[in-house]
Length: 297
Image (tube, rainbow, N blue to C red):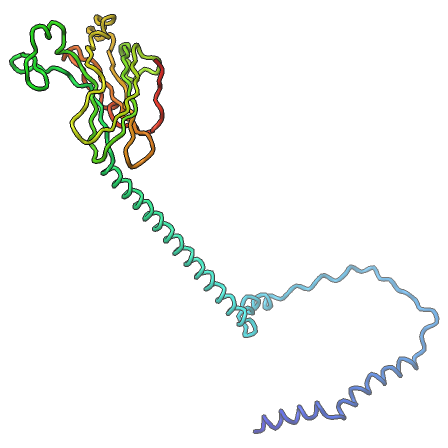
């Protein structure tokens, strides 16, 4: 109670008219003193050559207290705003991370759907395979027979019919294929060459062949030929392995599930030790890039 009473008394005295009158009378008395004091007739200016006082350095105690002044109650509201802002940044970063995860999952789902659709197309589409099929086979008893198992006659053996090959195609897919054209070429490459020649082949046969091919037995698209007819000029070098006889080409077709052209490449080399053509796997396969092949003849 005493503290309350003293506080009320102090506030009462500070707000009383007497105190205010005393505060107002002091400036008036000062003005009167200033007016009664005569001003000097000739003021004298005195100049003292003295360097300015150096700025006072803050005391070490003041600097020591600077670091925790930011934690005084008047700054608590600012720290609250900082905390709210930091939490907002945290939420924003979390949202960005979630958006990024969703985009990655969406991309994965789209890729999976695309692969699934392509797998369905590949399972249902037409696949055309081309091969150089031998017209004769040699049995264990060294008798030459045809595909039906019938032996070749003496006249056929003398005419080398058992050494002939035909270009056949077969659709191993589920839907029909539209055959467009094909090519068969012969090249004779020197020893050590392992790539197909980029220049013009020795002989080439290109033909348009419009035919709808279903999933059935293979069909013959090129009349039987004897590889020896092409190798006559280089037969000795081919037999001595100084040159290699290569029969290669392609078949162009289109399946029902797309309007793009498809290609099947084939490549066979003559093997003197076996006396027949053997397929080269790296060149006998579907073409990855569906571009028009070289038609130089």
